[in-house]
Structure formats: structure tokens, C-alpha cells
Length: 274
Image 1 (cartoon, rainbow, N blue to C red):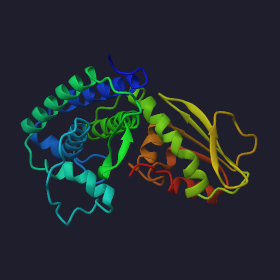
Image 2 (image 1 turned 60 degrees about the vertical axis):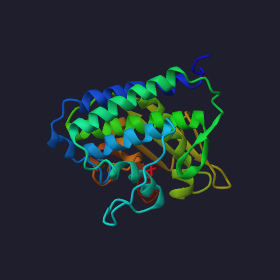
Image 3 (image 1 turned 180 degrees about the vertical axis):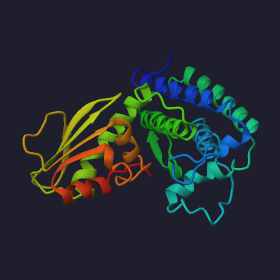
Image 4 (image 1 turned 180 degrees about the horizontal axis):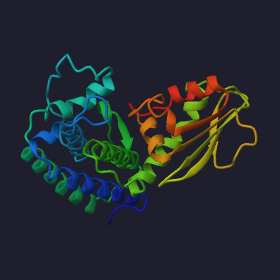
């Protein structure tokens, strides 16, 4: 048996992004590993440490036994503490140690994917000892990896892959979160509609509609009288939705029409990654 067809797009996206990350960091000199990335509190080294750590968890490796320092300003909740463990344990690793562990992890994960024959619904380990399906784990891994590839590209001044396989998975993940952003977090009124018109390497138009009970849904049909219409480019959409920038920083890249209070509430609630 081989990888289930449902899982193949996630494996392909992971492979594309991990190879890009490897290519980006392999030639870096020691000082470049300390460059700040758009991911709050993380350097290039920290992002790569996270990538290694999460793939090691996909491999079933035990989590490190490590005590986090108390002065990490960007760690504000338990999920972040969980994620930070794999990062902080590698914080003083040298450039050769980082690239060697990354390459070894890639070899192991490639072997795992070649031999993967489990059903997409198979339960696997998730964060905090939770369970998730293999499909959920692989989908989120592909999404997370592409977002961190973009963090590294920004930090190193090497833009690219905004329309790669991982980018399309990221689009679907971020769009799935939009109904809650608009209806629940921003509090759009029942019966209203909000239109998102995104252009660039990945283009789409989506409308979030809020029903009489205040629940949000999303579709690809335009709305004739939306409460708010937002037009922005794909890269800005990603940076906002992943919490890499706030709306005031990229205001010149967003065209907003409609209710200003609802617009502000949506943009304030736009970040959906933890």
C-alpha cells in the first residue's frame, strides 16, 4: 500500500516547503540565524527549530524535557508554552547543528511518508496529548510549514512561493476560519454580508453571510449590498490572518468600504493562528 490519495496533496505541499526551507538556510552564516522573523519573538533559528520539532513529533519522537525561561515576552498562553519547548531547547545550537538536524529530520520524514499506508481517519497524537486524525495532522503540518517558509523568506529577503502547493492549503485553512472571524469575533449583525476580494498570486472572492441566529457561512457568490467590502493582496491577507502584522501597519494595502466600525472589528479579529 502507499499514501492515501486524500493525503497526497498535503505530503506534496510539505515536501515543496521543506525543500525550500532547506535551500534557504543551508548557506546561512552564523549571524544570519539570529535575524528576526515576522513570527513574534522568533529568529530564523527559532523558526527552523520549530519546524524540526514539529516534524519530530509527527515522527512520534518524545517531546524534550526542558524548563522554559520565565522572561519570554512572546509566550503568553499554554499553547505557546507547548510550542516554545521545541524552540527553546535548540536556542543555542550552532548553524551546522541546525542544518544537520534539519536534513536528518527531512530524511526521516520522507521515509515515513513513503511508507505511510494508514487511513486518513487514523487517530494520531496532537498537541497537549490530544488526538487528531492523520488527515488533520498532515493538513495543518503543510499549512504551518508554508507559513513559516514565508517567515524565513521575509527575514532573509528572499520572497517567493506565494502560489506554491502549500499556499493553496493555507488559503483553504484561512478561509475556513473567516465565518467565525466575521460573525463571532467581530460581531457582524444578523442578516449582514462581508465580501473579501483578494488579488495577487492567489486570487479569490468570498462572501461571509451571517444568518438570523448570528452564525456565519462562506461562499463564492458576490453580495449586492455588503455591510463591508475588503480588497487586499494575497500576501497582506496571509500576514494579517497569521498575526504577522496589524492592520494599521498595512493600511495602505487594504481598501475598505462600508461600515467603519465593523471594518475595524473584523481587522482587529483577523489573526486566526495561535
